[in-house]
Image (cartoon, rainbow, N blue to C red; front, top):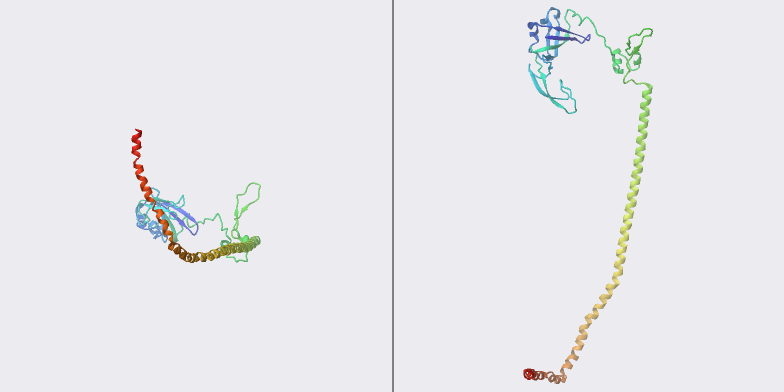
Length: 310
């Protein structure tokens, strides 16, 4: 089994190959983030304490923290889980991962030195790896050199020397300081605030003018509506006043009709007088109907004429 050992104090790391099963038994059945004494690896690791940080099995599947098994399982993983990198937003995928318990099926085991022992490990604890890139944020530079806000951070930037070319002078490269407050930046901040304040005041003024215009238009609309309603009511009242005299004439004509019975009552004696007169003598003239009856037999004699013609 290959073991990768890293030492955070110096930034160095080293890989060693161990084939002895007895030395590896101290790590079996241990989980990720557990600490193991390094005495089992040999005398040079005496006093060292290692912390298990991960590993891979012989097929290359990584160990996942929280999977309490020493075998390989398939889990449905999404963005934010370890051992998975989402290619699309909201993507989920079922992937094979190795459990977090150490077993003999691992090919690589990663360890971190938590406590240094008595002896130095060549290539691991006896050398220090320099950081190629220094901190570039202003607050982190102040923290590194224990500076105050009054100190100029630009004087403490760690510069990196570039490879020198023949016949040319040395060149250095320094990172650009982030979140650095300079007079120019402060001036731009003040200008942005002034522009934002000016825009807000202009928008408030325009909003007030618009509200005033809307109120005026609504008032004009209300007055126009009131005027139309009053004109309509005036026209209705004029029509009603014009129709009132015609109704009065009809009411005055009603008594004349009521007077008709009086005339009828006055004419009734006249009719009675006429009936009492000897007009009934003329009634026999109406009784001339027998002449018609006498003429009826003449019609019956018509067949004789027909016979004569025959």
